[in-house]
Amino acid sequence: GAGVSQTPSNKVTEKGKYVELRCDPISGHTALYWYRQSLGQGPEFLIYFQGTGAADDSGLPNDRFFAVRPEGSVSTLKIQRTERGDSAVYLCASSLRGSYNSPLHFGNGTRLTVT
Amino acid sequence: DQQVKQNSPSLSVQEGRISILNCDYTNSMFDYFLWYKKYPAEGPTFLISISSIKDKNEDGRFTVFLNKSAKHLSLHIVPSQPGDSAVYFCAASEGRDDKIIFGKGTRLHILP
Image 1 (spheres, rainbow over the protein chains, first blue to last red):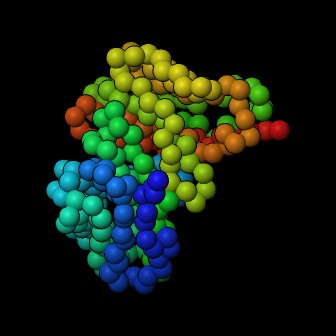
Image 2: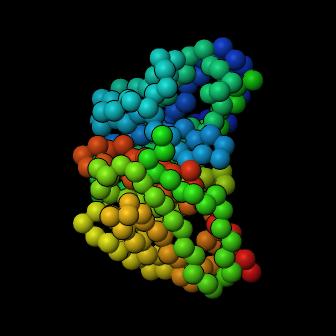
């Protein structure tokens, strides 16, 4: 079946601009996660949704980052006033319920480059 | 502070031999541990997991060992195959907290 889909696969933007990254989870998966991976690092947790609500947003680095999941399916990660340090691969993952005993299925990521 | 540590950035192993990847953690509240494998330009894929009530879990060529007293886990791959060349991430979560924390990864090279 279809896996987690992330669009776009690549995004180049200028410093100071606004970007939106989209994630389509696996159908029926109630839990959705955003991670960020910088070069040479492991995935860094950003935010986790259970249904429509953010269950844990403790990983969002600052108030320029915001994520929504209005209908409990597709999610959008929004970054305002982008900075060069935001350049990374943004990974989305979904699972059937919470991650406990239910592994995350990742998309291929969106590579964001801020120039 | 790194709660999940993979101290070997890379590892090379001869095809057919055993690959052992190590992981240490600092948070004693972690009770579920996972290994993910990642190929270039793809997202990580789930490999194997273990809960803290066990000390070993096996799935085909892959076995994960957990030593809670040492806060250490390892992934054994035997026999190693060329397709096993990838980056391996150790990860952990804490009970009802569904946030999964990842290590920095170990790049495994399987040599012909």
